Image 1 (cartoon, rainbow, N blue to C red):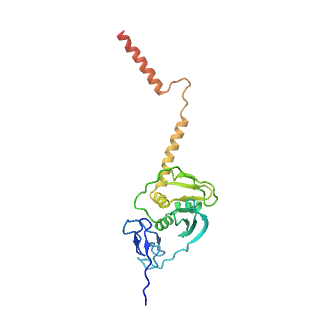
Image 2 (cartoon, rainbow, N blue to C red):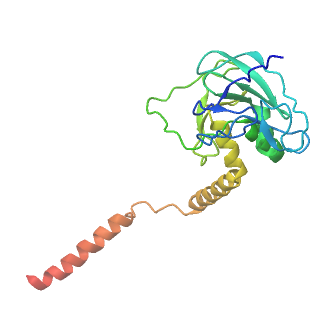
Image 3 (cartoon, rainbow, N blue to C red):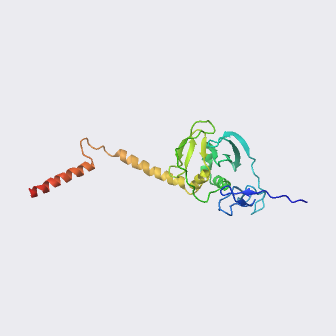
Length: 236
């Protein structure tokens, strides 16, 4: 019997060879693409046929090209299902398109976030953002240019957003946003917005400054000039 040669798998971050059952790259430490075991929910490689913890068979959803085009590479996006979530991914640049309803479900459901986080390859350290002009990208659904928005105002992850259809995440951005939500980022954002709104209402309730009344800086100047004139009398 002739033994079949095992397929060579490579880390998406550094290109190093990894085993079929590896969940982290032994060279750079990046998390590899994984799935949640349907029995014990342990994270196992997408290439594994059985869970290394409990032995359950791993079932993977078939991938298929979609009618959607990557707004960056223009190639066809590949549809995949992770738990109840549907993701359309670009195999060339690593970007991910998530529909509005799917993303809202991800943001609200902790268990679902965990499954998707496990299925996304991680990056061990922050990557420098290339300098250059901001380019607005077309929505894969309607073709209109999407808006650029800092997710939740404080996440630091700037996304391309079509308010009618969904969000485009560049490579690693979906993992960053889900990790931000897991760490309580949305609650921190809400608290900051409440403080800002209270400050806005407080300022709106303040009585307007009377016409002709000098501002604080002008009052200080007037006081200084009066004091200088008073002291000057003693030297003339």
